[in-house]
Length: 134
Image (tube, rainbow, N blue to C red; front, top):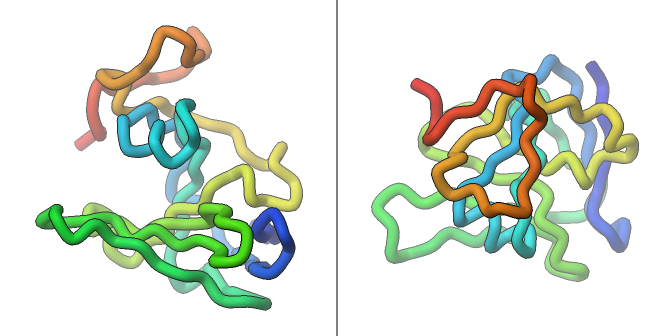
C-alpha cells in the first residue's frame, strides 16, 4: 500500500510504502485533547515504511510521564501528523486526516472506549475495547 499525505499548510509531506499494522479509532482522553474533542482516526505502520518527502516535523513529549508518546507536528501550521509510542517500538502512528486520500482509512477497532464521550460514534459492527487490546 502506498499512501501520501501532509500537513494543512503543505510544508510537511510524507509517503508510506507498506501495509498497515492496525487501523483504529482511539477514544482515549489524550487523543481527545489532541483532536479537539473527538476520537483520533489512526493507522499504524512500520517506522521504516514512513518517509518525509519535504519539510521537517517538530516533536513534543511530556516530561512528566514515565513513558511519554512522541508527537510529530508541523511547526508552521500545527497539524499533528504522527506519533510514536513506547508501546509499539519500530512503529509510527499516522493521523488519517493527513492522508491525501482520507477515504483510505477504514477503522477495524475502537480502543479506550472507557474514555468515550456520549457524542462519539462507534459503528455497531466494530470491535471495541475498554482499554488497549493485549
